[in-house]
Image 1: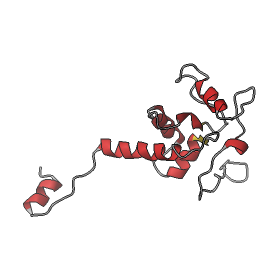
Image 2: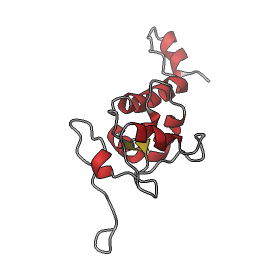
Image 3: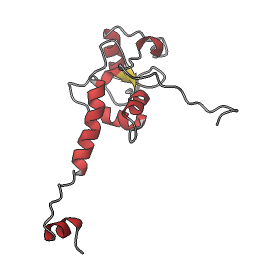
Image 4: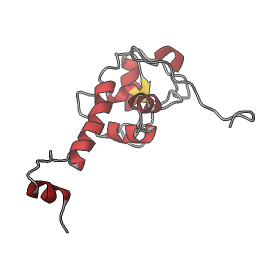
Length: 140
């Protein structure tokens, strides 16, 4: 079987090399890291908020997965769940590391380990606050 590249070479055409899966994965991760690096000290974003801003192909779960592999230049601790709580209890040691890092930046948590997103949520310039899409009896 002849590949498209072989066919193009036979016809005297040059096809730009397709990006590899590793190139695509790196670009995917870097888009998350670039946004997270913009979060100011003392503010947070949620996994879902980041996924919504970055668009198709991003979900809160994949953003969390990407954050697990972030480098030292990425303030991973500023990304929390939609309830305003840390989701790293089973990943980071000690379990309260993320919350303590955020408290050192001035973020206050209640006794249940939640911060007030109305106070601490950072919305990048030009972005509108996400509208919650909850199904009700009248709009499914």
